[in-house]
Length: 154
Image (cartoon, rainbow, N blue to C red; front, side, top):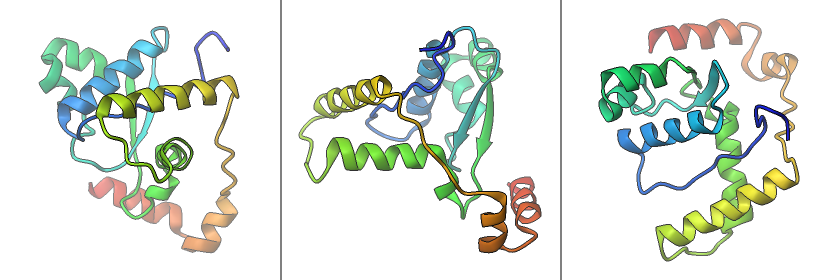
């Protein structure tokens, strides 16, 4: 694996989607990349995906320091399918969980850790083939301007 551990799968299960869960996940990601100056996170528009969550969980000094390591990129509200994290979640759901009901959070976490390890060993990547031309065909010629406008309004 390369020196910065690029391409690692850091998928993990949490009890909920609260501010503390997001803050702990961000901290976990930051610890996985200790030498990275800036970590780009692609996130959906959940209200907990903010620097404020980090500040509230870790206090002003540590929370701001942690937040400063991230560049947060929120996906457009009507285009969550563009989110690589959504793709990862779908893969975990299909390949790791299948149709099984997982009895405990501990068991779910164990299975997800195994899936991450297997994906890392296989050096699995998302081979995303959606191009600018594809976007223009699907969304129209002004798609980029509409997405940027929507982001500016949020």
